[in-house]
Image (tube, rainbow, N blue to C red; front, side):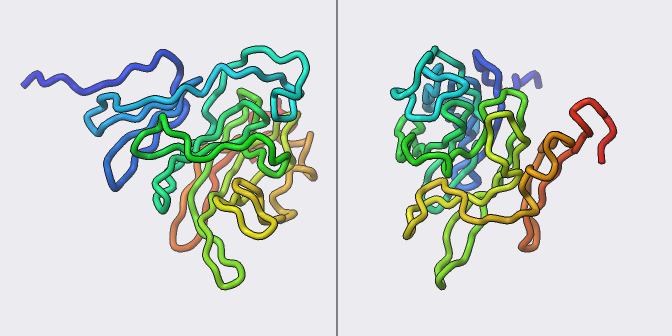
Length: 225
């Protein structure tokens, strides 16, 4: 009767957990590490994502930056991309750029580029800025593209997008992870510095995407609006 519950211990804080519904594998996004677990919580593989040589004001690639030092890489976003069997991993280093890892073995990196510029900065370098995301699709030129929608608060060095749509392949002038839709209703410009947005969750239902967040005045007023 006293069957022990399975468990897994991480040496650093775990920020995100996702499960592949097809295989049952579980992926953990922790500080400086991505873990791949069996459904039994036994470790299958892990990918080291930090510390990275970076600086708060660094515009990647880091090799072109001055005054860099080893900095922890907080996993900000973790999503299953089933159509090409990859794991979307976005951290806090290099202005919040992302990479694609192999779902079968996260030690294998399928895509990474730190030279595409600001259009591919997805998350935030700020530790206290929450980021949420959800997979979706986008139609253009009679084609359907896999995308993911990202909701995030505003950090002092971040872009002004509260919500962005990110493509997962190169197409015409678009590059992987680029924000492809400009919508003035989801820019932070009208709200900063009046409001702080704290995103908690994102989900899809009946063809719509929903974002759950709180908004506080001046960062000091605790009354949710």
